[in-house]
Amino acid sequence: MAELLLPDLDPTSDRAVFRQIADHIRDAIERGTLSEGDKIPSEARLMQHYGVARMTVRNALQVLQGEGLTVAEHGRGVFVRAHPLVRRLASDRFARRHRERGKAAFIAETEGTGGKPSVDSLTIAEEQVSAEVAEKLGIPLEDHVIRRSRRYLINGQPVETAVSYIPAEIARDTQIALPDSGPGGIYARLEELGYRLDHFVEEIRSRMPLRDEVRALKLAPGVPVFRLVRTAYAADGRAVEVCDTVMSSDAYVLSYELPAR
Amino acid sequence: MAELLLPDLDPTSDRAVFRQIADHIRDAIERGTLSEGDKIPSEARLMQHYGVARMTVRNALQVLQGEGLTVAEHGRGVFVRAHPLVRRLASDRFARRHRERGKAAFIAETEGTGGKPSVDSLTIAEEQVSAEVAEKLGIPLEDHVIRRSRRYLINGQPVETAVSYIPAEIARDTQIALPDSGPGGIYARLEELGYRLDHFVEEIRSRMPLRDEVRALKLAPGVPVFRLVRTAYAADGRAVEVCDTVMSSDAYVLSYELPAR
Image (spheres, rainbow over the protein chains, first blue to last red):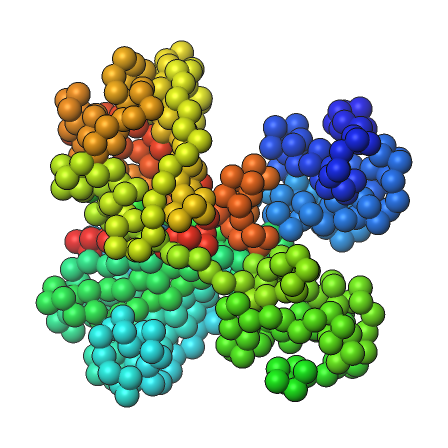
């Protein structure tokens, strides 16, 4: 244990023993004494160092896992969680120049990161609009939308799920309702249909994932998600698409430019 | 238990019993059968309904608390977590028109939400710059910065901590280094000093809070934080401030406008 210099327990503290142990290991991670991918001392070594029962050590390790600081690998031990490739999303990622070069946003974003982008789990349906989407699109609740749902992966690791809603009146019987939406993606198709895009509004929330989201994004314990809802506006002010995305917080840094004027 | 219609356990499932119980309650919350502030059935009732030991029920409730779905109130029971007042941050929150009316950004943001803003825990110091801030400010590691640290509260509830770093060469012996930075805040002072602001860049990450952050923001279990780092740029392209903030994800929706051009 000497290499980690974990302190001893404080018998005068009113802090539970398992929390004290978690504190010591957390401090080592935050100070960088333990780095990404480093192995946490085994249960047996921690039991010996602190003179406590196995359950106490397990409870301490559970705390750290819940905080997203460590990950247990079956049969190998517990490790400081390594953060995967982070995709930095810039303010210009929906710029027309990308669409004109035939690139959809996800491909444009991934360029230069060294990652290999892919898309799976694509489903397309026409359905009645939900209340939340109807409000954002400014359409009546009776209206239908084309719903395009898909999952984005980098190097085979899921990073984001996205569901686009486009008024059926606009998208029905167009390439937007086909599995291959063509070069530049659905934004390029919307512009060809006469809806020249003016701007987007993104709303960002952060929360712990729901169970389906843990599965779809293969999230480690203690990893929150961004929920980002983007609305695309045409030049006449009409909302033409709502895109509801859930992103692994491990995989993204979002970057925005704000005016000072 | 009839009012909740919790299903029975599936004895053929390979999913642990406490996870099945957590699944049932989570489903009720996600479907809206249990709403914000509703009480979860007591341990005794859950034990009786499922025919399981108290520890099993406690483990199930622990899962939900870790997901941020419930909160335990000592002596009263476990409740569906109510989300506090959410502050919606818009792209124009650093617009000059707010500064010219003598309002700092935090005050301008809070207007119209019905909340009462306050600031505490203010500390000001001159110190050597860190590597991360030096890189963003584009200054050498030997340089000093004025460090302004403070905590923001709405209706007495902490929502955000913020630490601003301004090159000491700019801010030393000015009102920026005083506790009261004056009307319009430090951005107004920077403009008076001749650093007309051009734009800001915000970088947003999401993660589980560190222990100090849980304390400073009084976060419930299972509530992640936004870490938002903003850099302010003057008209000549020089970075004049870095502001490192940690925000309760419960208290904020971030909103940005992106160009389509």
